[in-house]
Structure formats: C-alpha cells, structure tokens
Amino acid sequence: MNELMEYMPFLIPVIILELVLMVTALVHVVRHPDYRFGNRIFWILIVMFIQFLGPVVYFVFGRGDE
Amino acid sequence: MMNVLEIQHLSKQFGTHQVLRDLTFQVPEHSVYGFLGQNGAGKTTTMKIILGLLKADKGEVKVLGETVRYGFAKTNRRVGYLPDVPEFYGYMKAEQYLRLCGEITGLSAKEICSRSEELLSLVGLSEEKKKIRGYSRGMKQRLGIAQALLNEPGLLICDEPTSALDPLGRKEILDILSKVREKTTVLFSTHVLSDVERICDRAAVLKDGSLALSGSLEELKAQHRKDSLCLETGTPGGQKLLESEFQKKGYVFGVEKKNGVLIFHTSDMARLETELMICMTEHNICPLKMEVQKPTLENLFMEVIS
Amino acid sequence: MRAYWAFTKKELLESICTYKLLILGCIFLMFGFMNPFIAKITPELVKSFMPGGISIDLPAPSAADSWMQFFKNVPQMGLVVLAILFSGMMAGEIQKGTLILMVTKGLSRTAVLCSKFTVAVLLWTVSYAVCTGVTYGYTVYFWKTKDIDHLMPALLGVWLFGVLLLASDLLGSVISKSSYSSLLFTGIMVAVMFLLNIVPRIRKFNPMRLVSEPYGLITGALKTSDFSRSFLMTGVLLLILLVLSGIAFQKKQL
Image 1 (cartoon, rainbow over the protein chains, first blue to last red):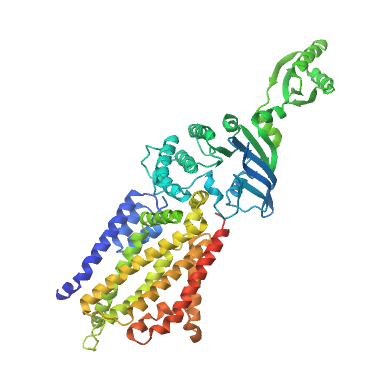
Image 2 (cartoon, rainbow over the protein chains, first blue to last red):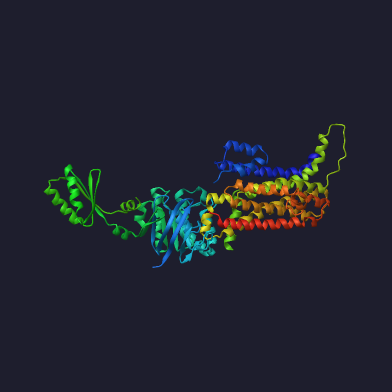
C-alpha cells in the first residue's frame, strides 16, 4: 500500500492520459465508420482494451481518409 | 482585341507518345473558349502546361503577356483553375478554404471577406455549413469555381467542368460560367458538344495533339457550310441514276449512299431541290422522304476528328 | 511571405484535425512519465525477480538514472515514432492532388516546403519540450536535485537529430511517391550512419553520436567539446537535405 502511494504521482496522470486518448479514439471510431481496414467492432475492442497503443495505432493506421 | 492566352509551337511527349505537336492558338479577351477533343487528345496536358504544372518539350506559353515557367507559380496569381476533379482539404469549411486561397493569392483581409461572400452566393454555397468532406461532386465543382474566381483572374481555365455531373449539376455549372464571361475570359475543355453550343463564342478542336479547327462558332459553321439533303426513294433503280446524274453537277460536292438513303452535299440547296424534283418526275422515280440537314457542331466535330 | 504564413496556419490546423498533434503529444508525454518511473522501479523489479535468499546490494536509483532512461527511450522509441508520423508529410498531398489548387493559386513550391518543415519542427519541439519538462519535474520531485551536468547540450543534441530526421523525411517524401518509400529513405540514412559509427575516425563527425552517446555527457565521461563536430556535421547535413528537397520539389510533377 505504501509503495502504491509512492507511485501515485505517476499513476494518476498516466491513467488520465490513457482515458483521454481512449475516449477521443472511441468517439472517432463511432462517428467515422470508414476505416482503412477492420470494422467498427474490431476498432472499438482495440481502442478500449489495448492500453495506450490501441488508440495510437487507430489514429495512425486505422483512421479512414475523410 | 488583346489575347489573354498565346500558345506558340507547343510540343510535349510522354515516353514515346507524342501528346502535343506544334500546337499554336490564341484566346482573345472576354470570350468563352471551348476546347474540344476526344479523350486523350491533349486537352488536360495543354492546360497543365499553361499552369506551369507540366514542362513543355518545346514552345512558349504566354498568359496575359507573361511567359509561363514550369515549377513557378507567378503567372498563376492571375489565372483561375478548376481541375476536372478538384481536391480540397476535407476538414475545412468552404469559407475557411476560400480564406486560405485568398491569403495565398495575396488579397487583403477585407477583399477576402467581400469576395468570398459574393462568390459563395454566386455558386450557391453561402448557406452551407458542412465541412468540405461532406460535399457532393457538384458542390465540390461549384466550390472549385468559387476558388478559381477568387483572385478575379484574367483567365479562367476549367478542365471538363461538367463531365462528372448529372444534368442538373451540369446546368448549374454552365450557368455560372456564362455569368462570369463579362468579367473574365474562360477557357474550358469538354467533349460534350451541347455545352459548347450553349455557352461558347469560340471553339478549337484538338486532334492528335494539334489544332484541327478553330474560330468563332459562327465562323466555324459558315466555313464548313455544307448543307445536305437526304433522299429516300421507292424505286431501287432510280438511286443509281440520280447518283451518277448529280455527281456531275458543279454545285454538288458529293453524293453518298448510306443504308439505302442518298445524301447530297451541296452549296446551293434551292437549285438542288428544283433539279432533283424535275429529274425524278422525268424518270418516274417516286420519293419516299426528302429532308434538308442543317450543319450542326456535332456533324462538324465528327467530320474533323474522324 | 503572407502565403507562407497562411499555408503554415493551414498545416497547423491540419495537424490538429488529423490528430497528429494529439498523438505526438500523448506519446511524448507518456515517455516523460516513463523515464523517471522506470528508473525508480528498476531496483524493485530486479529484487522481485531474484531467487529467494539471495540479496544483492543495488545502489538506490539516482536522478542520473532517470535521465539515462530519457536518453535511451527518446532516441530509441520516440524518434522512430517521429519519423513514422512525418513520413507522409508531402506524399499524402501529392497523391490526393490537394496541392494543385494551392500552387495554381500562386503559392510557391518553396513556401509549401518551408511551411511543412516549420510545422513538423514545431510539433517535434513542443512534444520534446513536454517530454523533457515532465521528466525534469519528476526527477526534481523524487531526487530533489536540480543540477545535472551538461544536461542542456545533451538535450539539444537529441532535439537536433530529430530535426535531421524530419528533414530526411521531407526529402524522402518529395522524391518518392508514397510515405512508405520516404520512411525507407530515412531508414537507410540512419542505417548508413549506424554503419559509419563503426569506424572510430568517422565517429567523431557522425550525427549518430548525438543520440547514441548523450549519456556520456551526463556521467562526465564526455565533454561538450567532444560533440562539437557532430553538431556541426548534423547542421551541414540538415542544410543539404533541405536544399535538395527544394531543388527536387521544384522539378516534381504535381
């Protein structure tokens, strides 16, 4: 418990960062239904369950062109 | 009358394919100039050379008196260009896009405001609040025109502006183009003849990379004035007789036979008609159908390119 | 000049709308947290992986360890991400044809390149500063020491190498048609530098040094003057890449 408290200054901002990314990516996945590959369910799972890298991969590789 | 565009001895080769050979023509001020030709005749290539987007192998292009140099955009500030499929930044709104164009082309903030408002209402997009990525083909084409006209260009170049549109969209674009003719000179390429007949006052026909025909629409029609007369007869033997008889006459250029119909090309329609009638009565030939054909741009075009 | 600003503004807007700023910011922010965290947690991890009964004396992590993580993670992962994200900086627009309308409105090609490069460097600088700031903040918070020797030149070196990568992305993306081949171009450039690093005499001039050995500065094994040739070389290479991009783009068919 003591150790956990010590890591709090890291954990809180990292969790916030992950949440922000996840929510932005999730909103984008839902609102723009055309992807370079994969489908909506696939991307929702990726974005929600792969921490940090999921949203990044979605924005860089999965996001469809306009 | 000043020439807005002068093209001298332009040649361009792609690999082994000679696209343009020694193309020379001028576009006078305040005209709507139709640039005709089949697909692959070299229309787009010519336009891209005028805009400095392609390098010519030989020849010179002058826009409003200034020579165009490949890769440099100086002459472009006085030209408006609408590509066949204009591509915009999808995340912008029409107004934002026009502001960007205005700043690039060197308009003042005030001019940008008034011009873009004016143009958006001209092309019917002033109420549009969507981002450009949500636009239809026709809307993009209209925004393309607004963008091209923003800098009050001395020359507006449109590459097949109507080819991808439905009849309604096509009418809208043509209306806009003929509206702007008072302020600027328009050069537009097309393979649709009815578009040319509707709004152009001059036209040029491109064939195999060189000019096959050019001039004002009236001139073109007059030059190639070959009235013709179609005749269907009920007496089979009579056709041969009429053909040989009339081929000899001085005012008849030629007689063709197509699907059992005789076509006479003549410079004197009235005389042909009377003499045909007399001839038919003399030899007891019964006419089934007689029809006079006026020259159309379509016939002219087909004649030139085939 | 006005056209340059206008196009630069458009580039900035684009990097926001295409989520480039967000991704870059988040990744480097994450690195910023990771560096001190890994430094702090490493001894604990080593301890828990040791078989029971054996106890080894590990020195307590120091502020220098946190910066060592920084100079390991940012060049190894951060710069790769940077090179990937900007590999399509020209290719996308050339492929789509959006530049045609800009150029036919009178935008000079030099201005296009300058704007693209300015914004790329700006984004890199901002995310790098964020990363550095976070690592710095946590390091000071945990280890209470502000003074790290030669931190500034070490930081500057990594930053400059990032700028070099962006310039090589730019050239690669001007001379090729797709973003993949532009990435390949940058990759080859880095690989060549890696190979040249084997030769000790070239090593002193190699830009690679800026990212492979900045930690030597912090430990005091190397002096700032040892890096001056690498800095100079990087600057020269950067200029060459930019001038070549300019020449190549002038000839490029849009």
